[in-house]
Length: 223
Image 1 (tube, one colour):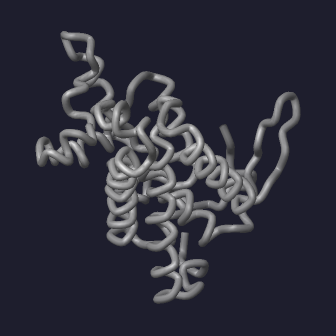
Image 2: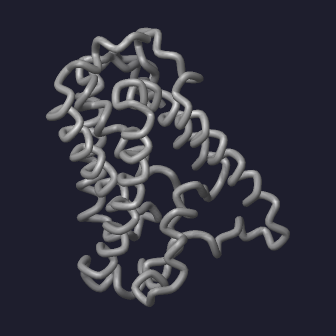
């Protein structure tokens, strides 16, 4: 887990869509926990085989708000809280929301296609494994943060030492690790690494579009 090293004075509670997304994720997780079957409403998760069959296409959206267990949602929402306020404050509410969903959707689609193009492992196994979680969209926000605030500092615990690193260093290193896992784990790790890669790529594209239009004016926005 990381923390921002300095208080940038950006209020999380003024970032309306960030607040709504956080509440939605928690509410959906509580709803999953209330599943009398104990299966965490898994029928609302995304399954690549169903997608390619044209079935339950709405799970592209529902899966973005679901999590597999308490540690899954804690880890995702922790990092969401660290980066989301800067992203929404910089991009504005509407473009932020578009970026969030574009990242999540592209993440899910790349994960689905990876089960076809990654050798036999994906075709025989991963196409039928439910995928869920906000991490694809959050990886999109990570890319946005790294591009818009590359020099911001994070506290990074490493064993018994807490290091101070730049946002760009931490996020790019994390992305390279995910890219490596995506190609060499063949989805057998239980984590949809290609979803993380897809979300990051989509978020980076949106961030570059934003910077091309707005330049550095976002740095001067009142907090």
